[in-house]
Image (tube, rainbow, N blue to C red):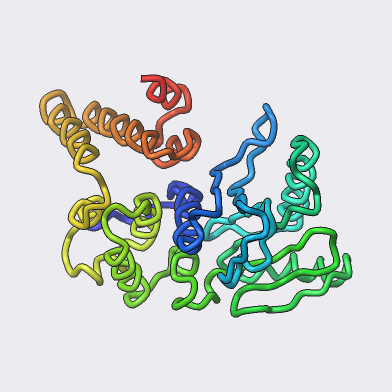
Length: 293
């Protein structure tokens, strides 16, 4: 049977966003450097996604990236979460810390991008009525915010154009038949070597009922990705080993081993330990041990 809908906090949305924004900007991969959960200090302060433009003066025509300067900070809110005033100030703080701790970065080189599925009404109300900022919709779902030192934009991903921004638009838990089908089609065009495993895993796990409608079968999330070639064969072999042991020594032990195999392989894909712990249900100590193996 198709997996039951999991709580959103168990879905690895942030690595999916990291892959989605890379797919959106694939045409510029030679002049952009993407850093996932970029750590600002020795304390756990991490930018969701940092996009560095190389060289600084390269022109990018992609709608949401036209405002990019050399250092571009992105804050992503998972479906079901919302962009608050506190989130706004936190990300502004990240920008100042980033510029203040890196001699090669000038404060004028930084832009801020906030991505949320829905329109952040409370934040927009605060920015316009309290801070006196002006907000203009430059493209469908892309709002430029003026009035601060930083170039700022807010992206309402559900309102984005599917033809221009299919990867970011589809990063949610309410895809319909045509939306999920469009992602499968776009993924097939990219090919099995495209770096979108985490992206596909997240949206399929988040939309199980639509998945069943698209496939008209009892395939699981993993079955679909395996058949499409997006989950490497070694990952399935690890799961099968866990299933074998589960049959011989008990279901619980088998599930635990399968989780550990999943965790090791997700770590090998570059997904952060914190996200792997959330996705697998394993504790951070276990994740740390697996990362050292």
